[in-house]
Image (tube, rainbow, N blue to C red; front, side, top):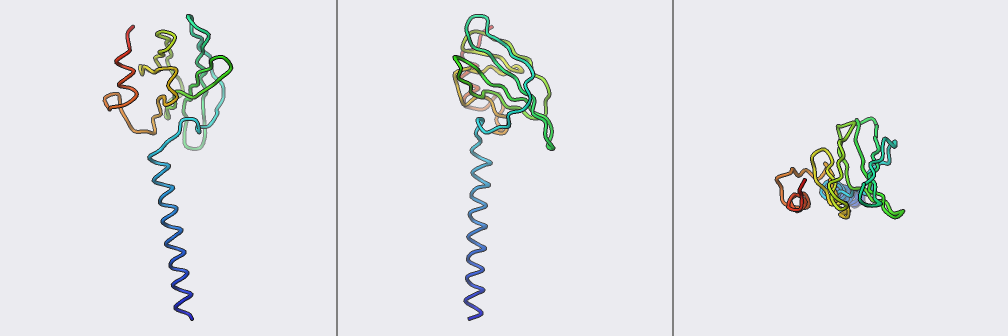
Length: 137
């Protein structure tokens, strides 16, 4: 009977470890910019040619500081920018669909946005490259 108890305990332990590992891998690979902390409102940058605006929030916690940027349009809001290790941003509206945040051009209609946790640079394939194609000052 004692061996059966140890085998069950062993199987439960392995199952818990596998499930925990699965969630850890999922959370490290699939980040969601909608789930970042709210933070404290810093400033709003309205678009001159449309009714959209970029709201900037400073997030401070025990891990450091970060900036969250959200686009507000027609009462709807969605996060478009998340970068850790900074306390300020430089925001320039290029046109009603493109905004330049810390020299990173972003499509304001793209809910994927820029998230520093994704680990890409400006030279990787993906959303940023497509934004550079449409970028003109």
